[in-house]
Image (cartoon, rainbow, N blue to C red; front, top):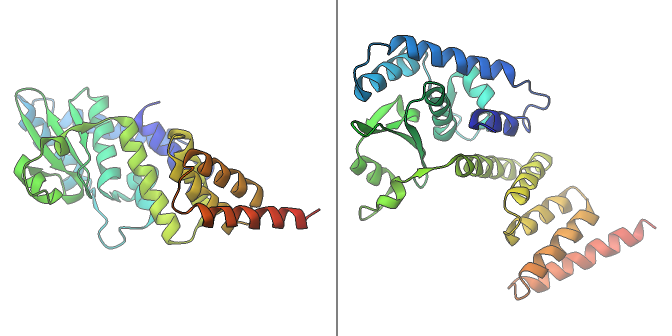
Length: 253
């Protein structure tokens, strides 16, 4: 599955029944517009300059600083509609336009911020879609990442799976903080499916089941967590929660 389709599938948590085709066509149109405006570009620098003028100056894509933690900022359909989002969702727009044009653009997952990098072997630059397509050097990126010493590993491209995982984690944090437990549970289902080896995800999902009074699934997740982490520091607390779930289920009989 391509990144755009996967990101739109994630957006169905916020927009159930979302048709994907309209957003995909929007990306197709944007890509063709970029192609037209950069058809005379002689090098990577001219391509990026033309793409940035169109996307950020003409179309007005920008970072939503006023309402950063709105879940809509993580939904690709809404980002395309409002032309506003957070660093990673705006980066996905740029990445998917570049993919359609067969241009070498890569996601860069800095700690606390997401960028893209253009690198065709002759010209390379980092680009911040959240700040209107600002062009950045490696040193700029290190300062943004607040690393004390240059660490090339933080500037390594990330793959589609890592991008999606980060988008999922962003939504998880938003839904938890807003106590939108049913939506948070959908996110946790995705995380468990993607990384079944991570015990903590079962514990987090169990807490959501408790909030929703889904005691059977809560008990199952906690038992799975304790099997995976038999020496867990919170074992006594989790065992007490399992007993609570068992009593609650027994009361239904």
